[in-house]
Image (tube, rainbow, N blue to C red):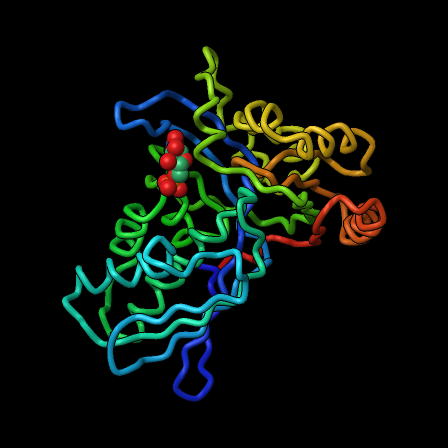
Length: 293
Ligand code: C5P
């Protein structure tokens, strides 16, 4: 796992990362409306911070971002309810959530928060659940949640819940741009056509394991990109501009709207980020993948 745990007095702090997809292919449409997919995901060092504290009773969730609902639909609230249901523990808990991972960006911020909540309650309430159990529960909350129990890099299949960790020895230098408008995962998936000839994840997996970042840059693939381009002018604009960026490759992450470049070095990433900030395209982040182990 790549979550960072610490204690401040009687509070448990969890910092939990975002992600980008280096490869995302659609293999079919399922009878339940979801899509069968194959995706290679890496965590990126842009962290939401969650502060957990026991309280007398009930659930209190607060968020630094007023745009995020903290009602029953919030993934942290849903994760708490699920752990209560599975463990029978009724102890009260309060969570203060500091959002740094952009929302509606294809960076799985909400899913990461849900995974962090499962891991935190596992510790706070002494449940001793295995990562397999937490990943299984996470899969019920959202397709991207199980990944975070196998990060920093993994291949996810099925709806996203069949996860295999993937060695990634290289440091990957990314610049991520989140345009002002986000994208809804549901509406992007609703515009997907299943390809006749799916692109295999194996070459990307091999390049990543070999630490061949040039190759990783060339192989970046995201089947959702076309649907997102049709929905978002901002993503279309970013893709057009990206052709002149100094980088090894560029792609949209997940269902967007975040768009990333893989750079040769930290210096190249910093320089590209500087240029992109001047162009006022949205929020710009320079991130690497957290190291393995
Ligand atoms: O699982 P999650 O709630 O994150 O998925 C959000 C939406 O994305 C789903 O309602 C579905 O429309 C789409 N989706 C899909 N196939 C997947 C994952 C997500 O169609 N494998």
